[in-house]
Image (cartoon, rainbow, N blue to C red):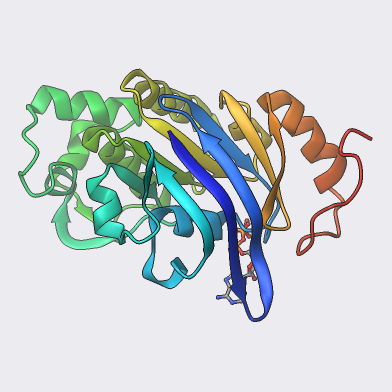
Length: 243
Ligand SMILES: Nc1ncnc2c1ncn2[C@@H]1O[C@H](COP(=O)(O)OP(=O)(O)OP(=O)(O)O)[C@@H](O)[C@H]1O
């Protein structure tokens, strides 16, 4: 279980995350739903332990162990990984080398093709380079394939559908199913209702704190009512969220 307790992160005198608490149980898919600028990416960087985002109050606890002081590689060793909103390019590295961590992960050709098929790509991609010659959507798919291969304990997917066409929502659902089957805890950061509906549970993020949590459909309805025309990007909505 990953527990986030009372996180506060200040930038330019403003609390970008404030009193933020959440719990993520093993093998479940969670959506963190929120508008532009509410703190979604900041939360994912805090969870990952980016050097630039370690000056927060509160605690992050993984399976009973406080991991606040752990760096990105140390958290990665504990099985926490991030799917970037904009996937990285690796000039000179082929898709096959990238997926097998330069041969460190032993996978048969069949296994590689199977993983690629889940993300809607064929074997021709294995010899392509993970650089600008691939489209953003193709890089995103390859990143999702690599996440399935490393078999993480917890994965944070920052806008998993960015650059991916609407027809491929089913592909994202398939990836989530595969990750769940392996017991991975998935945290999807999104502003898309369709993506939030794929989760088992959802949180509504507003003004740097979790305003509500529950069934995805219920949270989507709150989001529609409260966040669509919301002027509270930098400040939580006050009052009864059910009205
Ligand atoms: N280093 C910083 N200095 C000042 N303000 C910052 C800094 N980093 C983030 N912010 C502000 O914090 C808020 C949250 O940013 P964040 O990128 O987490 O939002 P988001 O929910 O991911 O938005 P989007 O959906 O647009 O990607 C924004 O108002 C942003 O301008």
